[in-house]
Amino acid sequence: MHFDNMIWRVFLEVNTRDKALKMISKIEQTLGHKIVLGTCERYWKDETLYEVDFTIPLNCSNIEQAVFKSLILANKINREWYVIGPYETQTNIWHFEGICSKPNFIGMNWANFIIENDIA
Image (cartoon, rainbow, N blue to C red; front, side, top):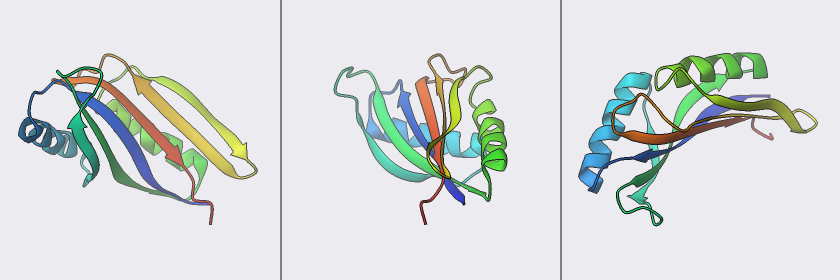
């Protein structure tokens, strides 16, 4: 069982992709981990937001380490999170996530993270 990455989705209060990328750079500095960017596009429901998906390395070998490390990292964005799990979706397949509807991180409107172990 291994937890390679922490998957993030955030909504940023910016009006251009360039500004979104600058904020992603600030998030990267805050988290202290290299971000691997997925999508970065204007949110279709609200033109004042950019929806950004990215991952950061987690590199944990068990669920206990992964949950603890993900909470330490999430705390850098905001101290109040609604967490779901951890729970097994199948035998030895773990899921844990957090949702923050009012991050303290300036310019961030909403944040979500998910960790799941590899199925290999």
